[in-house]
Length: 321
Ligand SMILES: [Fe+2]
Ligand SMILES: [Fe+2]
Image (cartoon, rainbow, N blue to C red; front, side):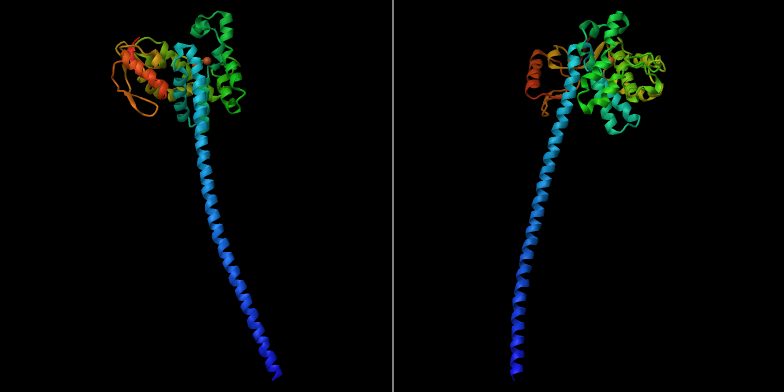
C-alpha cells in the first residue's frame, strides 16, 4: 500500500512537472511567435528603408549626372563665347561623332568618352588671341601656327586634374593628328592614332568646312573636301560611316534660297528672323510656334523666359546671312 501511495505521489509529481514544462514550452512558443512577427516587421521596415535610400541615391545620381552634363556644356560654351564663328561647333562635332561611334559598334561608355572629347576638343584654344581664333590656319604666320598647334596639348592638360576625363584627354590631344603622320602634336600615323581621335578629326573638319562654304551645296562641298583628303588627313575606313550622318545632320542647316538656318540665343535674335522649330520654356510651356516671324515684343519675351525658365539650347531661326 505504501508503495502504491509512493508510486501515485511519483506520478502526481511527474504530472505537475509535465504541466510546468508544457506551460514553459507554450510561453516560449508565444515569445518565439512574437519574435518572428517582430522580425518580419523589422525586415519589412528595413526593406522599405533600403528602397528609400536607393531612390534617394538614384535621384542624387541623376542630379550629379545633370550637373556633370551642364558643366561639360558650360565648358564647351566658354570657347564658343569667345569665338562667335564657332557657334555650336563643339555640339555639332559631338552630335556627328556620337552617331559615327555608334555605327562603329562602340560600347556606351566609349560613346560617352567620344561625346565628352568632342564637346571639349578645342578647350585648349581658350587662351589663344582673337587673331588666332578668328584667323585662317592657311594664312597664319610661323609664330601663330606654333601657338595654334599647342591647343590639343593645352586642352588635355586643362582637364587632366579630373580623373574621369583623362581618357577623353587622350582623344583631345590627338584630334589634329593626320592619317599620314603629318599632323600634330605627336605626328602619329594610321593605327597609332586612337580610333576615337580619328573620328573627332573628321567630325571637326566636316563642321568647319560646312560653315565656311558659301552656297546652297554645302553638304556636297563638305563631303568632297573630306574625300579629297582621305588617306592623307583622314582615316578612309571611317568615311562610309560619315556620309549618311553628315547628310542627315546638316540637311536642316543648309542654305535655302539664300537663307541660312541656325540655332541662336535670345541676345542674338533680330527682328524679321523666322522661327523654324516650336520654342518651349524649360518646363514645356509653348512660347512660339514654328513659322512665327520675330518682332521686338517676342524677342524681349524670349529674353525674359530664358532668365526665368530657360529651355535647353537655343532657338532655331532662318534668316538671310
Ligand atoms: Fe582643334
Ligand atoms: Fe574644332
